Amino acid sequence: MNFDEIEWKIAIRPEEYEDKGCVRAILKDDLYPSLEVQTVTPRFYYHKKYHPQDKYSQIILYTKESCKDESEYFKPFVLDCVNKFKEDLKLNTVDIISLIPNGNNKYYPNIISVAKIISTLLSKPVSVIFDREDTQKNFQRDRQNRYNNLHGKFKLKEVNVSGKTILIIDDIRTTGISILECARVLKENNALNIISFALGTNSSNEPKIKEVKG
Image (tube, rainbow, N blue to C red):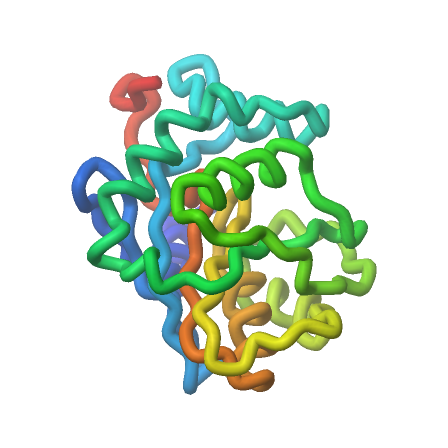
C-alpha cells in the first residue's frame, strides 16, 4: 500500500477523538447528507497483527469468529463508557436499544449480552427492530463499496419508532456505513434521534505495534 492510499483511507473516516478514556465521533458522510449520528466506543480496535499486544482487540475478533459470548470481559469497559457519557449523549432519553444484525440477519451472542448489560444499566428495553437481507462479505474499509453492499438492505420490522430515541449497538465500527444506513431507515420512519455504541472502532492511523497496550 502506498502513501496516497493510506491518506485516502484516513480522509474518508469520521473525525474521532479520545474523550474520558473512550473514543467519540460524529458519523456523517456525503452519501447521507442529512444524517449525523453521535457515537461512542470504549476502545480502538486494532487489526490482527496487533493482537499479541492488545487483548481487547483479540477478544473482539475471537467472539466474531467463534460466536462465543465473552461479554463478562467487556462488561467493565461497557459500563464505564456508558456511565461516562450518560449525560453528554443523553442516554437516559433512549427509548429503545437495538442491534445491527450481521450479514446472515443474525446476532453474535456477545453483542446480545452487551445489549442486555446496557439495557439493565439504562433501564430500557432491547428490541430486535431490523431485518437485513443477505449481503456479501466485504472486508474493505472503502465506504463506497460498503454503501453499495448495504444500501437498502435493512428494513424496519413492525415497530413504532416515531418520536423515539434509538440506541444502536454494533461490535466493530469501521466506515460507519451500516450505522448510517440503519439511521436512514429509522429517520424515514420518524425516529427522533439515533445514538450509536460499538465495542471497538477501527483506526486507520494505527500506531507502531510496540505502542499498543492491551
